[in-house]
Amino acid sequence: MDEMNQEMSEMPNVSIGDVITGKVVKVEDKQVLVDIGYKVEGIVPISELSNLHVETASDAVAEGDELTLKVKKADDDEIVLSKRAVDAEAAWNDLEQKLATGEVFEAMVKDIVKGGLVVDVGLRGFIPASLVETYYVEDFNDYKGTSLTLKVIELDREQNRVILSHSAVVEQENEQQKQSLMQSLEPGQVIDGTVQRITDFGAFVDIGGIDGLVHISQLAHEHVNKASDVVEEGQQIKVKILSVDRDNERISLSLKDTLPGPWEQIEDKIKPGEVLEGKVRRLVHFGAFVELMPGVEGLVHISQIARRHIGTPNEVLEENQLVQVKVLEVNESEKRISLSIKELEEDQSRQEVEQYRKDDDSGFQLGDFIGDKLNKLK
Image (cartoon, rainbow, N blue to C red; front, side, top):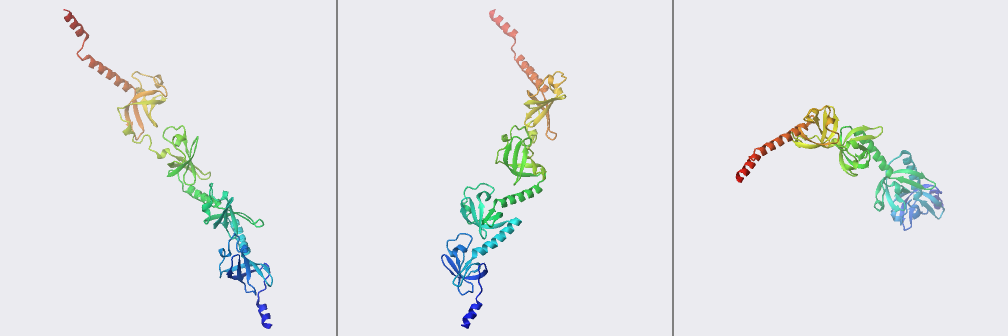
């Protein structure tokens, strides 16, 4: 009797709500038996093993595992314990801390449900479909069993609601990358970009997470009516940074400055002595500027406009008029081309005179023709 009383006195005093430790001694299909140093083994029902659904107890624990458990029921014949309650308390405290600090952490996707994903964060966490990615996802099946970086968005213990977001992490990473890139950009740099959007005033180009604007005037060396005439969405292009406004996150870009200029190697394209057709673009007091090709204009000095003396160029020419011109001089380094209309007219006159002389020297004269006829009559 004394031995029995001594044994009972050594048994721990177990009360509802106590947190105790025990060792798994048997894993059955729907429950686990745990040695807690009491006269009877503690029982952990499968429903109290995890905050997530498990099919069999062996999915959650194994024989020999040391568990921290909370007493749900205690009497002489039966001790019912919960691993889920202990895990949930620890998880709530951890998640509340993560919500307060904005900490980013990883968790495993356990299931795909209507409206989103279920993840294991020590209890059941939910990622709504709209918070999985920054873009629309049609099929979430590939996410099961994968690990995602997450942030806590909302917690409610009473409703047992844990709302998480992966897209918030992606957005945060993108913003950090954006700020880092913004600090590294300097005017004059030439970088790769992708045309994102085309507008009436130009094209927005993604240069690595930041959109910069190529104004329509910076798309080409020649005049552009519509940006879509030069670029298209999704096109990969090289652009030059013109200016960076870090405070307002505005970046001005140029496509034109990365392209060969219209004057580049112009001496190989246009040579002195050539006769070309051009359009009169501007009339000034000292002559007329004639466009020979997009972005390339030459000057017809007033003295080279006509064979006769004129007071102003508009006595002979008007803007947008198509004219034939002769190239006198080409200077690529100074971007200067000298042209003449007068010389072309003089050349044509000389050719006409030469042709007349050739005809005149052919040996055929009207007098000879008449004399020959008279001789025949005689």
